[in-house]
Image 1 (spheres, helix red, strand yellow):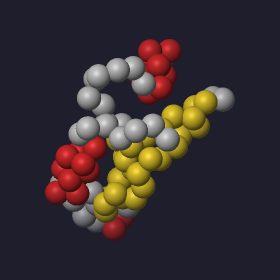
Image 2 (cartoon, rainbow, N blue to C red; image 1 turned 30 degrees about the vertical axis):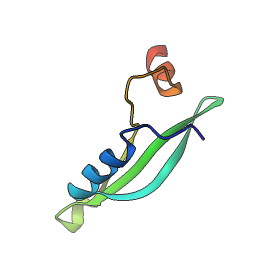
Image 3 (cartoon, rainbow, N blue to C red; image 1 turned 120 degrees about the horizontal axis):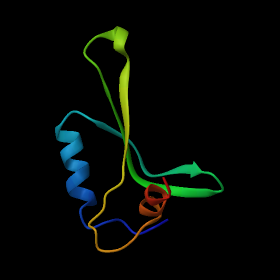
Length: 76
């Protein structure tokens, strides 16, 4: 697992304050033959039961250096 970014705790606290529930940290997403590590996975219930819930994956970056997520983005 990659090291956590210096802003990890601040982003996590902001998501929780905005009503998101953190469902995973250090989440892995397969992309082709590679694995991309995502810092946080979160979800929140929508107001009406018919709409279900929203889910997001959050990659926290301080822009200090390159990452695998940046490499995936540049290939598109």
